[in-house]
Amino acid sequence: MKTVNTFQKLKDNNEKIAMLTAYDYSTAQVLEQADIDAILVGDSLAMVALGYKDTYNISIDEMLIFVRAVARGAQKSFIIGDMPFMSYNLSVEQGLENAAKMIKAGASGVKLEGCNEHILHLIKRCVESGIPVLGHLGFTPQLMNTIGGHKIQGKTKDKVEEILKSAKKLEEAGCFAVVLELMPEESAKYITENLNIPTIGIGAGKYCSGQIVVTDDILGKFTDFAPKFVKKYADLHDVVLNAAEEYIGEVKNELFPSEKESFFA
Image (cartoon, rainbow, N blue to C red; front, side):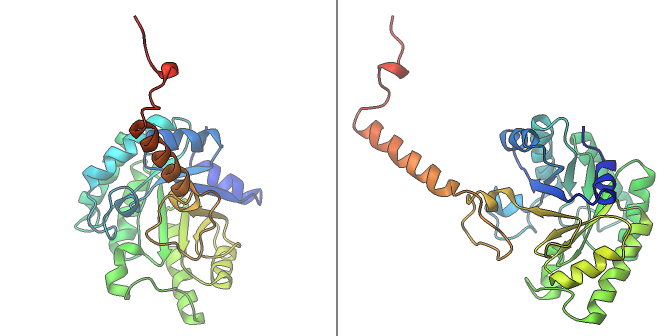
């Protein structure tokens, strides 16, 4: 059984933390069978599963549907529900209420982006209420419009120190780990070495305490774009395409269903 304590235990044992995303029951089952350390039901599903151009349009109610599906498929896993855009920004009360919905839907914890006074207060309230929180710094997709798009963060010494300062605040507020996204490898290494809690990298090099990527990316299912930091471990797009084309051909040529797939009186 994976718990929030798994993260610190792995870091303390110098063992890397492996995380992946899941949005559905069957994928969650497979990831649990693979012994994944944690599953993120990421707001990336807005693009990958629902076809939105970004993550802004998905609601907390939509996220909860996917959290429930993943929780049913991975009952022994540590599942993190990604708090979507504007589901925690209006007030601490709003954020705490929606975080509680995530837990009731089957999540083990939640992920929040950024580090301002509001976020820090919300993290403290969540942790006090029994809700583990994963922080997120560097490139924060929900703030993409204010930071000018997909840009690498922490490229200068001053910026790295600024991110480290924020990461320490997240640690003090009670985060069990922090995601570092889109930053130079040496920047993420420096931040990781100066924190007590684990760091989870996505496009942040090999020196983070662990890694997370979108499962559909490493399986080659999502082909709208391919981030530089993703390694493709399979090409399911072509597998599905070839299988669909073969099925269509057999139906058109009356080869399917055959006697093997048919019932007889």
